[in-house]
Length: 479
Image 1 (cartoon, rainbow, N blue to C red):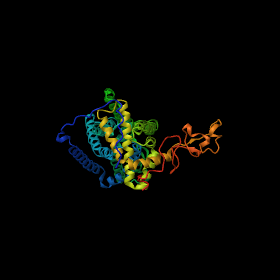
Image 2: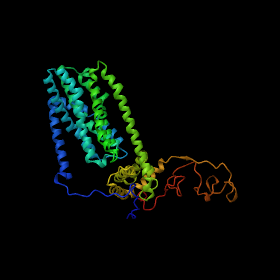
Image 3: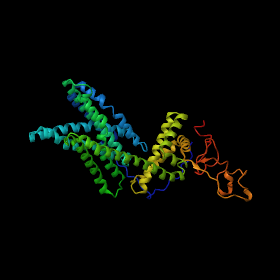
Image 4: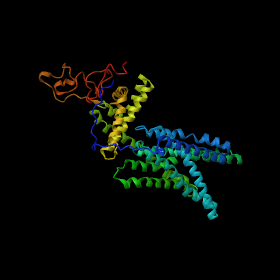
């Protein structure tokens, strides 16, 4: 039986009340909304499948599918890596990918085809219509269709959308799904062209399309849409009083995404080397800059965890070592591995959940201290603390072990002055370097480095005040 709950830390901005509950209409129920969404995405997927197979043929469709799927696992893994500090639920990523691959792709194919045909009919110039459709119509339609998924998650899954990284991940996964369907169409069509002309090998249209779309620019669509995601991420970071910023930043990000998409699509009109010039001058630097931004944001999130959680350790909700361990991705991994090695995969999952809840708690308090937490701060804080308390018996020993393994070493040096009197000269006193217990310094032989004591060592931790082993008899890892 767990000991009683420790006291709650005070709310940084004073007490808050949750919103009053209201009776939900039938169309507001979760089951109805999820059912409608699944039905919409399923119908969109079936229609887009029929359209793509109509344009590529059966053989071209399967060739395009086999080639288009190659970059998908790498892109999804990259965005999941960015989201490891506070991982969002899988259902959000599944929705984002399905929306991009089905709904957004269907909107783009129908709208682009209609607009291009209308322009060709109105101007009686099919070549100019194709160029205008690729450089103007397609960026507006496609980026707007992909942005709809980010908007839906922002509005209806607000707890999971709290900052820049969330916007980048949702946008990137949505664009990955869109690019997947688009690549099937382009690669399947290229294969059909080669079949008609009899070309094959490295000089074929399929090989050229594969090189440009899969090898050189698999990140193109994610890069465009990530700009929209950053706009929504900045809006999520804005306080309730910053209404103008919250209203203007997402459209600004969308406009930037459309502009970069138009520049990319129009590169073929800039001359023989226009594509490579745009690729080298804009795409690669933009990709590098955005990569640096999201990695920097991830490091800032870890720093927020280390800075916000000590208040809960002081109140007894967390062990003293946990803020340090939870603020290190290496320590988190070691904790999960330690739990899995001693108690199996369910324990490793419990530690992973503990880490996620603790991170959410740190971000919640960070927003609360800046006046951006919302009216449900107290309710949400209590929910997260209760989830942590339920898993603490499994997670605490694992995190304590991880903290011991990753604590930075600090060099111990002898005092520059001799110690006389009852303590002697520092020889044979039983104190490290002859330092007396009366000064409140650690007892026992002085190690060369100190941070955490070695596993199984007793006594206070050297210099950090973290709890030390051996674990108590009730420790699940000792049973």
